[in-house]
Image (cartoon, rainbow, N blue to C red; front, side, top):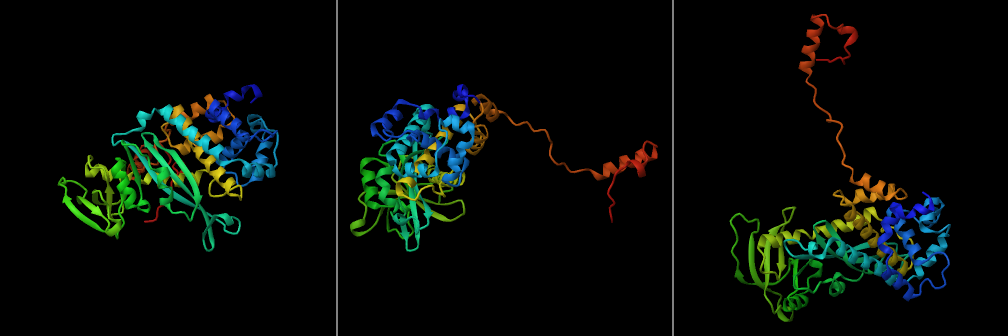
Amino acid sequence: MQGKDITKSTFFQLFQPIFNEKIFQLINNAGVDKYVKKLTALKLFYLLAYAQLEQLKGLRDISNSLNNDLQSICIALDSISHSQISRRLNALPVSIFKAIFQDLTRQIGEKVGFQKIRNSLGRIYLIDASVISLCLSRYRWAEFRKEKGGIKLHLRLNLFGQGVLPDCATITTAKHSDKTEMDNLIVEEKDAINIFDRGYVDYKKFDHYCEKGIGFVTRLKSNAVVYVQKELPLSPASEISRDYIAILGWGSSRMKHPVRLIETTDTEGNQITIVTNVFEKTAEEIGQLYRYRWQIEIFFKWLKQHLHVKHLYGLGQQAVENQLYIALATYCLLKMIQIRTGCEGSLLTVKRLVCACLYEPYEVFRKKLCKQKKRTSKGRRRLNYEAIYELTVRQVMDGETNFLNEVSYDPIIL
């Protein structure tokens, strides 16, 4: 690939959403590149995003990646030491990469069409948090337990027909409970339904959501105090065992507004109780809504397995948060290229092919991605040994073949 062909490469098309006036203006206003000659904020983003895709283990590996002439040409950076990458990663304000991540989510919404993000059950948001364990002796600021450190990624996903999309994220130390970031993640729109686990159960918040018309679906804790007010009818063929209206809590913590409780079983057959303030949907639809919550668990698993977030490149809190926001932005870039190409395969397939075709022309990548696999083999089939034996005997009797010399067979001991 020559320099003039860079814009036709898969690398350029992958990062094209970053090339917009809003991002350039943000970086310019922040003044983070004012006295920087080599490693600008965007070049650091390209390096770290590349490291996430290739799952490079350390800063020296990132530095050595520029020994690839094609990589060096694409990033417009001849060389950079690992120590310079480390200093820059620690020095850049988190707001820069967080803003890039948020802008990418906006672009995806515009690309897909915000109306299409809504499904038959409404506009659905999944909320949860995941802990990334850290060595306490190296990350003193991330103290979690007595001998353990960790950070927590609080996330809201938007569920739509083509999968899930990170919609909002905050990062804290792991000792912060999930409920501390609840106000930042809940979508206060009347047509939105927020789905979260029982770690977010808060009766005062539930009363507030009922007053404001903010929909939520969650799981009730086993020790909850419940005052039943009314039983609701169920279809005889329903998988729901009970549907009723009740008041939760007691004493000063007792809720003012009634909520709906639905008893059903999870995928493992365990009895669970779902609590919601959504009354217009059927009990079966509410049960289906709560099952969607597992999509965020799958997202966290995908992020940890296929992007480099379990191993961190910096020791400072700012460096760690920068890396996580770059990882989320990288996921969005992959999602955008999947939507743009109309690929119906998995995102992992897109990621692997992007890595394989990073410096090839984008059209080559697109053809390979969209190429339908043709099955050339019918697979292993069971042989009909009786038919083979009868045919061989008939050929020998007719003198068509010399059984001992021409037929290859394995001796069978009866």
